[in-house]
Image: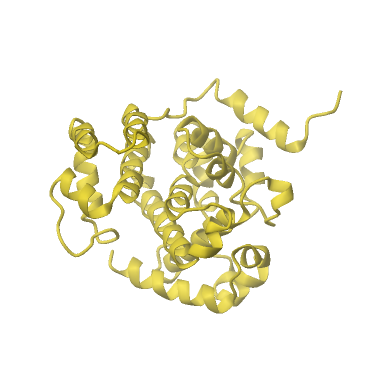
Length: 300
């Protein structure tokens, strides 16, 4: 019998830990929303009524839509108005954002920083996807899938913080863009946030390539044959994570960007496989950085 591969061993250790901790299951509202959207033509009235029945999600959604990062220049004050203006795909991904935040336990000390960074990565991934539309369509990747991957990439971090007190000391480095963090996590608790996040994404019935991008988002080299997933999606989330961290470093919110990566050329030298996967160059990264810095700045 063949010995399990390092990856299989990693998954088994994570699955064993799930006997001791609980990862949030997919909310019923998401399952029902998926059902309504899958029935052609979608019943928009039923969608609106479904969301309205959950007062907490309704309040969180309207707050998110009207926040500086997502606002479209006019205040949205109803679910029907939100659906009409956003369209179903954008509406769904923001409902998913609200449900994830509602489901994942986050301590008051970490909540603001964690969710601010998470949303910036999701927004960056969506923006990159819109800029590289034709490149991504070659692998069947859509902007909303990129947003969702950015949203879920670190979703396990608060769960592990809540269940393993020693893990809290790793929060700063784990949520950085440093590549070796998985070894620190494994030594501390016997698993890492990528594999737990992957299992949670699967339990929420996210597309398989989104789940695999969550699993491999700290991978040093993007290799389609090795990872068995669309490399462009993984490239998008790695680039989005860097752009969010870079802005946070310049804004004085974080010191976690590696010294050699404070400029675009340094990051591009270290992440050549990302550029190859996305078909971009260092100048494109600089333009994306400028675009997103302007968008992030509206939060200040």
